[in-house]
Length: 389
Image (cartoon, helix red, strand yellow):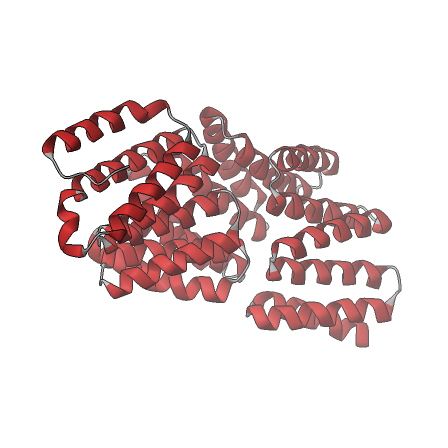
């Protein structure tokens, strides 16, 4: 593309760009990169003539990634967004850079690609601090906390989330406030502080219902149900989990339906209805594999192992625990790894393999001390004392 120096050339270029909607993403990116190279090669004082074209192209990129995002075509979104970042840099638009980096982090989070998600969210957070953008800062802190919750890095998550919550309230970001409240509730649930978890989750539920955000509501109701599972209050758990299942089926969200089926399996286990529990766990396992949801797959394998342990089938339990451990280590869930090592230790203890049990308990304890989960630390220390008797 030659240098544009007349109004007629500008109009011709805009007309050309308007016809580009059906072009491939690869062509769009190639032409965008070419335009940027030319724009950056100009002296700063000479760029004003070409700036409208650059802005027009940036707008078209935005329209394209939004169209792909609405269709859940996230890989295509991720092909376009890095170029959007570069256009915002070229146009000296730091808020646009930060917002786009944050969006990239959120898309990677949706795809369960947590390492990339953290990388881009950290970059967005750095931009928010440089330009003192409080809304962007609250958004990125909350999103960082959410990713760290998924990775089982609860102490770090809580630090980010407790910073995010007052900022979201200060700027009037109710969805962000609800997300922070829900994730703080999830941290407290993981730490065994169940009443505090319920308090935060109930606050988050009010906000999700205010906004008529059915997806967020489903996630929070599921977590409330799971908290009641942890409290061994199966009737309340069943009520909330059935609500979750109804919402997710209305939405057609089969992946999260699988997670809820797994939680219902645990309720049936608490009721002593082992065949129904196993049926729900197997349904959940099949769905997690259908969607390549490794977090849910590892969690469900652990739950099946626990069910077989309760049923007295220790070798089967051990097999499922070891499958789960491979997955949990693969995704980097340190808390999940500690829980599984403790569970394997329990099976070894039941089988009379005292030294092996002690080895697993010690490994689990080391991890949990690093994670900072006092509730599970207490359980493991109790197991070690019983081995030593």
